[in-house]
Each structure stands twice: as structure tokens, then as C-alpha cells.
Image 1 (tube, helix red, strand yellow):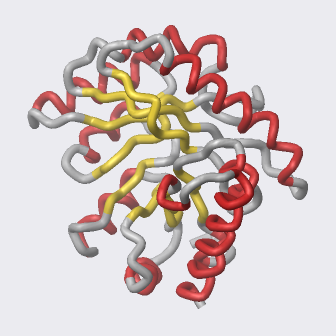
Image 2: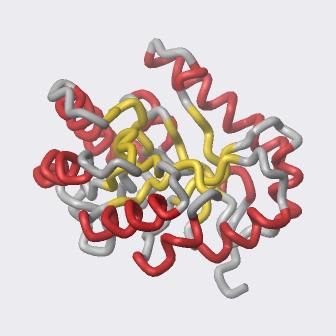
Length: 230
């Protein structure tokens, strides 16, 4: 079932790219495996997908230890400063950097191992009180502050749009994220790329792709509903 779901998602990604006049190879599918057992990831690996997203550092670390080392792990959940040290050497991309204090901790821990952390700045484009992330207006200032850290490389931006039954209602947020990304890119800030735009989840990833997403985070659409009681 997981492999069938992945095929359906990939077909929808391709269709969205066609509508937008984009190459499907521009879009990376991140299979969000949070709360799902390692066996589900092993099955998903048969599709060739190597990018997997986790919300919690402990769960990512546990899966890292027992699953193939060619998996590219993405930390997509809110990251506490005291957990950063457990990600060094394990994580491909941290999607959820939303403060300079967190960036300072990332710099400190990755510097100890002489490694570079690839990160995205999390933007709360919809200004939801329940979500983490900074405002669009604060983004460039934070990017410039973090850009000076030698062991951090900003690769782009991330947002979590509101949960909705109508994907079209999130189109404006995605469009504004793309505009913000282009605007920051045009400033040519040293040590900063805006190549990655991580936005769109199971309910709205097709709209996100039409508006410029380069990474989409699909969990339920691949692995099915989650049981958070586990």
C-alpha cells in the first residue's frame, strides 16, 4: 500500500509540475515518517525515495541507528536547543530554524565536530498563533544574522500553511513565500542560498508546487493516518 501511495503522490507531483511548466526533477518528495515504524520506511525505500522527515530528535536518532545510512534525514519539527547535539552527523537538512538563539546552538554543536549544518529559516507566513516560525518581515534580518556563522549554511525557507480542506485557500501563502525567497535571493547575501522552498503537505502540496515549492513534505498521503497515542 505504501508503494502504491508513493506512486500516486509522484504522479500528482508530476501533474502539478506540468501545470506550472516545471520539471518534476526540481521537486524533492520528503516522506514524513514521524510516528511510523522503521518497517514502513524500509518498505518506502523500495520506491527509491531516500528523503525522510521526522518531527522529534529522539525518533530521528533511533531510526538513524537501525536504518540504511544512505537515507537523507530531515528535521522538520520544532527544534529545542538542548537537542541539537544529537543531530550532528545524522541530519541532512534542518527545516525549522526560527531564532538566532537556536542558530547559535547549532553553530556551537556542529563546530565541535567540524561539520556544517544545512538549514532552512521557518517562516510563519499565515501568522498562526499555534505555529512556530518568524514573520515575513523579520526573515531577512534573521537570515543576515545567521549568515555569519561559519558552520551553518542557509539553503532556503520553510513554512507550514494552515490545515484546510480547501488547498486553494493556502495558495496566497505559498505565493508570498516564493516572493520572499526571490527577494532575499536578490540581495546576494554571503553564505546564503535560496534554492530550497520547503512548503506543502499532504493536503496542499500540489498547490505549493504550482507556486514554487522545491520540497514537499507528505506523510499521511504515503504512510496513512497516524496514531499519536503510541
